[in-house]
Image (cartoon, rainbow, N blue to C red; front, side, top):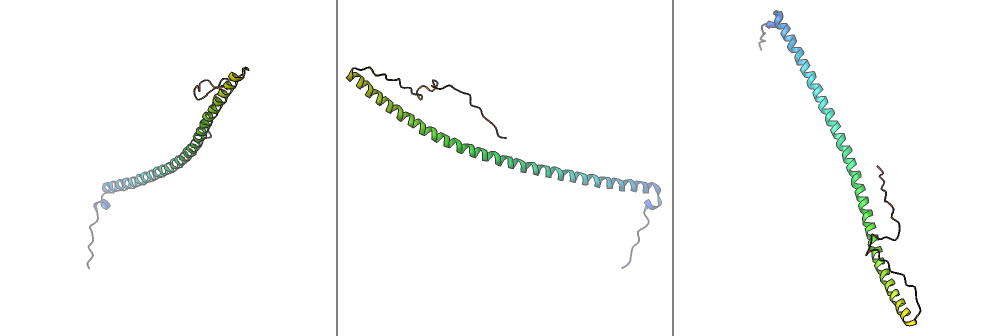
Length: 141
């Protein structure tokens, strides 16, 4: 095969063209460096976002666990409250029955029996027999 020689470029012989070529080469290098910095900046931003997503997912998991735990506690307390309410009703009915027996005994015997008034907290919850204290909540953050 025959080799074809290119004629000498005009930049090799003309100093103005050489200066333009040098500027072009510097601009290309500058553009490459700028593009490299831009890619690095994007990569850093991506890594930061991935880390933030990971931290938020971990935080979300912790919050979900706290919600689950709190819900379980709520269900247990609600069940206990239901049992206690049923017991209050049963005991109130027993007390009323006993008081009616005392009234009958008082009427039949002629003796005065001191029969206390029945307090039904479920009927009047705003008239609690004990002093009320504020409920404080704590946060274990």
